[in-house]
Length: 212
Image (tube, rainbow, N blue to C red; front, side, top):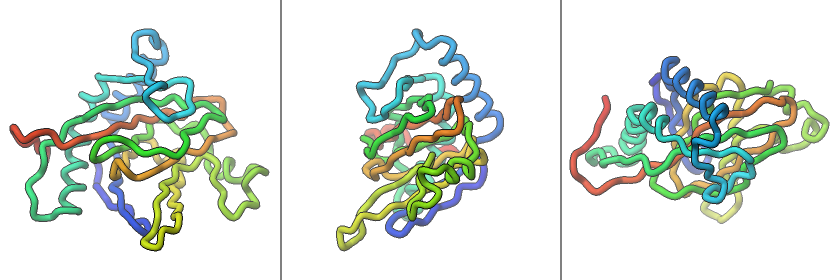
């Protein structure tokens, strides 16, 4: 995993990093295998908010990502509670999204303590998306963007967008599970935007797992 850095928004912060090239290759290979063998994998549409045709559970990806996810969760814990011992993190669930043109993920939050999203494949050019007639003159262009939504201390709605482009392949962002977010549709590619997402919980203390 590359350098972990905080992303500071107006009212909260997330952590951002990149998985190694080797991990990204393993995830791309797993995504390809799932697409070619969809009947072997559990569909999660009824359990997820996504307005996507293809969403699957993948246990192998849990194994691939466990070290990186726990490292990131420990770092998040350190930022928020400096002097406390690392919890015993457990990956509660993990899934893969194959998002097609026009599909979207409506506003939702997750269960768990911390959640993450990891982009595997970004098929579009962000400048092309934001230059389309439907949003180029908007005061809030949103085509293809990932967006966090929260309220400020006065109860006003706060929009916090991430301009996800091709450079985000292999990027992972971790955030509080209760934080609402949405994924806007893209329009300029017929290929899949592939991402993984999931949740971590603090398990009852047995042995502390810490990857340093």
